[in-house]
Length: 637
Image 1: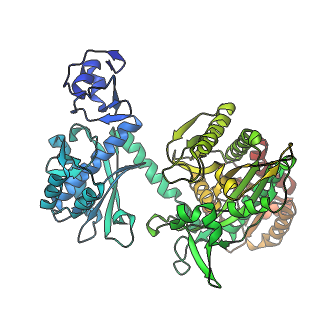
Image 2 (image 1 turned 90 degrees about the horizontal axis):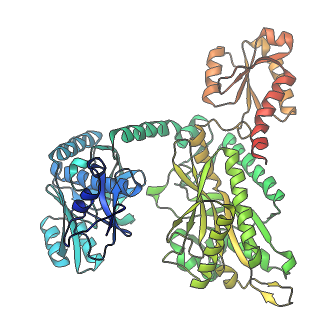
């Protein structure tokens, strides 16, 4: 059989680790976490499956290897918690995108001092180099085992699995219900850090037991861990919630409700500028503006499939004994616009655009500033076209996304998300839609990955994933292909043959949620928004009161040039005013002293540290205007 690219004769009953050790150098094998046969990951202590023809090593620094390391570290943490706090009950402990967590039911809150003690115990267990062992038990035996241990949550999980057998992993004195795989020994887990404690509900149900979730992270080596922890510290400084307060952009008031954003004047101005920019760009590309109501009758949501497939994420109300759904999406109104009159094949494509306010029910535990809210605005469009136009429309949207992301300086990549378990429509339509999305990306030469089972319930989609300054990935733009809703709403157009035909619909957003995009952009830039988007582009700073009259003249001059400016003429020292303007992330500071008044000029200081110096008012305005326009010229928009 093939082993790590080599042809080897493998004895029946040989262990995966033994076989890989023979095929690899000592240095290479040291970094092997688990084995892989086909798509199945295997413990190194597992016997090579009889039908395995190609056995590959999974290295510690690979994506799959890192996931195993983090999962094993979650078990290591649970072992330490049970050692130090024996009455704690364990629930689940998976790896996640940036680390791992484990949820515990314990009588008192865990403190920062507890985390230090747990981490120290974990290090002791690493030093002991305990083995991870796997055993398969009958469900009956497993129920008895965890029952004897008093682990009620594990008993519930075993009962819900409804399987004849389950696998149990043991490291040291700790046993856990788990599919695995895991590292061979705890000694491989040398770079980890416990980060925080948060509340969580058992199985995400707010009516069930409240638990304590300990978050941590782990890496293959200390250097990678150190880099990640430095990024976390930088992320704290860039936290958009902190910047939102510092820059006076927005707030979330508990009197209003969780997940509901109140925009302050400067934040509302950023939104308005962003939305105005989008309107102009959509008009350039042949979109028409539409506007739908906030609530629609429940029957429409039943017809679309949202009621059956998305109801738990919706809010409902009653008017005149009639049930209405508050819209979580804008597509229904847009389809009704299309259906309001007879359409010819010559009328297609129809591209409808709306900055639509939507509401979606999110559990309180996942709400996070602007990044996860319950009410938000989508830059939502629906493109209704003939099947022969579909690929060109997808390409047009993908290029639009590329232009916008380039303007903001984001790198991005594409994922194609396929049919989920909960879906409507025929397999044939799903296949056609998926092929159309992949075909468009292939024609553009854009690389993409497949995200199995993560499509919308009505169709597959392209997700555009952007990468921020801290190398974090965010999903913003989406292009969804839908053959099903046009069928359900009986959309049609008259073809060249005089017969009625069914169109195809693309659902798409460019920025996605305006709130979320602003949150991501604030963290990407650290609050130093590009000059064109900054609510205040220039701040005029006086040295003494004697310059106040000239400062007002400069203010009026800049405003007439279309530059957003403010005056700081308070009776404060210049250094204090400069520091405040820097904290406000204002792109340009224009200092006025007696010399500047005499010369009818300003002393220009830039946010990025450049010092253009003394400039006439015309020169200063031109300098600022050039900085405002530069990203658009660079991006060709």
